[in-house]
Amino acid sequence: MGIADNLKRLREAAGLSQLRLAKKSGVSQQLISQIENGKNTSTKALPALAAAIGCKVYDIDPSYAEGTGSGRAVPLASIDLLARVAREGLTAVPEDLERVSVGGLGEGEWIALRTMDDALDLIAPEGALLIANLADTAMEDRRFYLFYDEEQGTVFYRWFIHGHLETYSSRPRFGPISLRKSLRPLARISMAITHL
Image 1 (cartoon, helix red, strand yellow):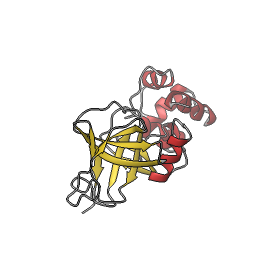
Image 2 (spheres, rainbow, N blue to C red; image 1 turned 135 degrees about the vertical axis):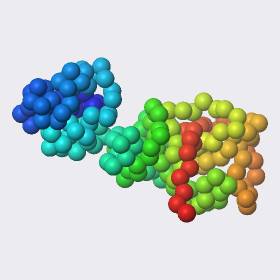
Image 3 (cartoon, rainbow, N blue to C red; image 1 turned 120 degrees about the horizontal axis):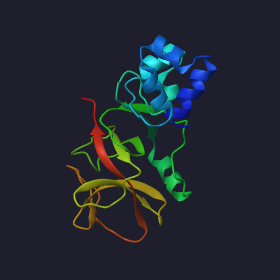
């Protein structure tokens, strides 16, 4: 269910008309109607609406991360889980994963995962979070990607440059990998988050 359906369902379950919710929340009835009809996708009013209904913002918009305003709750996946998703041809990661709050993300199917080695340590030391968009697999030079190796059944992350996949490391243990048919891009890595 989307924001429109969730808001209407929760409002009705609370026994509130659009007018009553408008008075209780301080949000105009016109905006409530637009959100419920899918004509306005703004999430700025959701905290006030959720408080007036007596629910969490996440109940209205599952991608909303509490306390971040415009942040998004991104599922935290593991390399093994991503390999299973790719191997089984699934189109999304499971809904019940732990989530991390990430701001500044545009449209997409975002995931987070922790680096487990030093393959990208120049931008993301071991243990850093990589934020990747599963909806963005178009290969562009000088970008970072998650790849699935169909022969090995594994997922790994690399920098794509001049037709090769390279580590981006101060201590490279792996040589460049040439693109081959068994390698499939799963997601473009757009952000690395570290805690110093």
